[in-house]
Image (cartoon, rainbow, N blue to C red):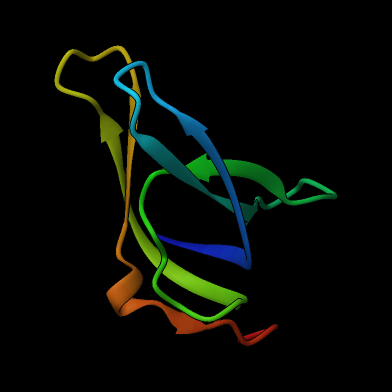
Amino acid sequence: MKLVIDWKGETNSFTSKRGSQVILYVLYVRVRGEPYPVRVELFDNPGKPAGVYEVPAKIGLSMDRRRLDVQLDWAAADPYKAGG
């Protein structure tokens, strides 16, 4: 499955309970049938310049089956071409 993701270079950060700095990367996922992209925050750095990408994704349940596990393959991401 490929997701269309707007990466604008936004981040949020906070200090963990252990005192280390944690960075969350803000992405906007375009969902079919929705009028606006869905904002998500992930720990994984996209490592790409800001832009719109088609990103291969694997979606499943976590090992404890209590969370949705989404793995984005930014190395295989391509710039998004509307209508393509």
